[in-house]
Image (cartoon, rainbow, N blue to C red; front, side, top):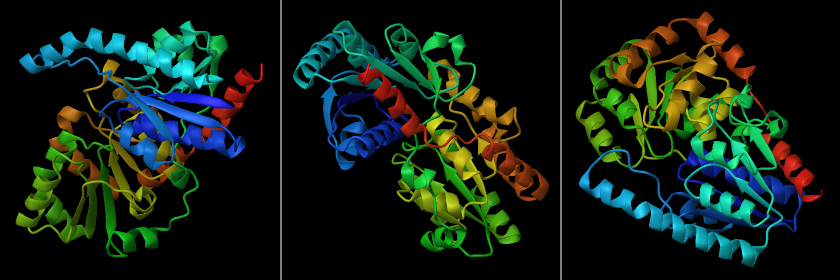
Amino acid sequence: MKAIISGGGTGGHIFPAIAIANAIKARHSDASILFVGAEGRMEMEKVPAAGYDIKGLPIAGLQRKLTVSNIIKNLQLPFKMMRSRNMVKKILRDFNPDIVVGVGGFASEPTLKAAASMGYPTLIQEQNSYAGLTNKMLAKDARTICVAYEGMERFFPAEKIVFTGNPIRADIEKMTATKEEGRAHFELADDSKVLLIIGGSLGARSINQMMLSNLELVKKIGQEQNLQVIWQTGQWMNDEAVAAVKQAGADGTIKVHRFISRMDLAYAAADVIISRAGAIAISELCIVGKPLILIPSPNVAEDHQTKNALALSNKNAAILVRDSECATKGIPTVVELLADDERRNEMCRNILALAKRNAAELIVDEIDKIVTK
């Protein structure tokens, strides 16, 4: 089997793409897999680190904030798109894949559109509860559309939809880490309550600002209620966070990390988790099954993170706190949740009921059906 997998931009696109590739290789050991991503984006580093080849396209997204620099970038987009499509056609001719899989992100649109125009079969993996514009356009030519939420016939032809769930990292899906191992790894007290704060692989400014503006409160809660915090800041605010925590004298309560590589141990250590509401993060968190506060990013297409969060909060599987209110409501919500054992237990039961395992294998089932037709 020869497969091209295209997409990226964030960990939410890259991790499922790699999970699909790993599942293909597990079933077809002689398979050849090539990734197509966007130049300068995270996939150009993460995919080779996972052992796969990748080609980069000069594609970029529309800059929504109107500055002089962004206007110039937007004017360059048609030329970048044209160049990307020409490059993709050459990649397709040279590699000659049996299947082209799109996981979302800048590169997936020119790659799947060119593949369909050249007669190569395509499969879309839609991660969110609200389909993005790109996947809605690509659905017309796709053979199969793998989804993670019910009711997706609102966006796609019902006969093409297969409910597979979202592929997640194997170390999370098959998590064996214990609470004791997690706390030892992060140098936390065995008897403390632990709050894990994650804003995605790139960090989340408003969640970071929420913590910075509440350091004294978090420190006080830590001292009075034996709370410790694991805080993943992302790259851009890490130095500021480290300095602020040290200045506040809260470094015994709050452990600041630029990026957490052993997320399985972080999940294992946590009693309560604060997270963005990206589709892959939610899929992981459903399997982890911990009490969860979701703060959806407002800076995404079609506000899909809020829709993802509502899919859980409407079933009492998570608490939704709006991004605009997180500075004032985020930490008090944690305090209320930690004080309510019954609600935490109910939330754990409800979120575990939403977990979908073996998604990558189910997607490979659909790839095999297409390739062997």
